[in-house]
Amino acid sequence: IQKMQFIAEQEAELAPTEEELRAYYTANSEKYELPSSVSFEQLQFQSHDSASSALSAGESITVLAVSSMQSRINVRQSPLQVASTFGREFARSLNNHEVASDWQGPIKSTFGWHLVKVLEKHSASVAPFIDIRATVLSDYSYEARVQAQADFIEQVRPNYDIVRKEE
Image (cartoon, rainbow, N blue to C red):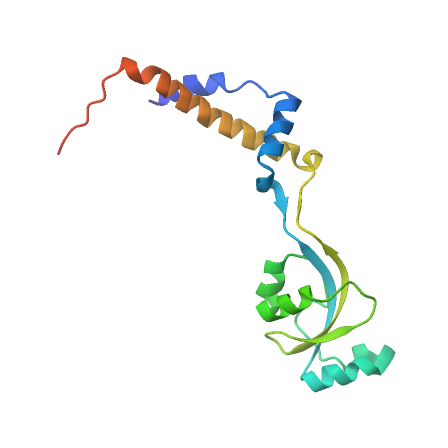
């Protein structure tokens, strides 16, 4: 079986053309989708009231925040990353805020209350072909080998009798 599989794989070893690779990329674009992401700055407060009153504090807002183990600036975080760090409720609330230079909130997390500045939002998108060409080539080659094995087995199967030993 291994010898047959090796022979079949050799037929699939031919490098694809650029057009074949791009066609594979287009047909399988869901494999190469990048999740949506958000970059934001956050400050943590002990209560909803302290976060709300900090909004009117102007430039001294950062002094009023409590120290936190969480990163103050979070760059290109997927919804899953935000939820795993701050909780689902925070991730949902953050998603409802628009990009702005002002502090927004308060938003509740698993750690308390936060004010946030949404720095940028990116929608889900497919990674550009040029950036992931090596990955696409690897995926294409793997699928070509698997398909070549299956085709070869179907081609030679009528020439053999399969006998299974009963226990």
